[in-house]
Image: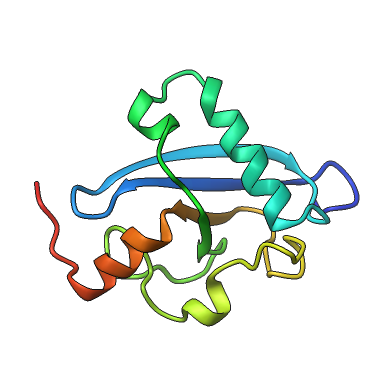
Length: 128
């Protein structure tokens, strides 16, 4: 599967709260990798407004940043919430296409509020 044919499958990890590990996975099928990150973020924000099974706090959160969490068959981070390493390469730049950012089939992408992420990087304490 690729951007030319039927598109790819991507999982979005909606991170509502870093401290409370409030994360919900949402799958997007038939994604065209020639879509810009900015357009894809708008698509996700529009989709989650009406997607069944998402509580209102997840629907209305101020998501503004996407970051590659991991790719299929790749290694995962030891942090249970988000990969805090390599921001320069893994945070998606809005003006670039998904393909140019390295997104491929079965990539998992975290979608979160950047300000909250920066605070979490300073203090990674989680609350249960």
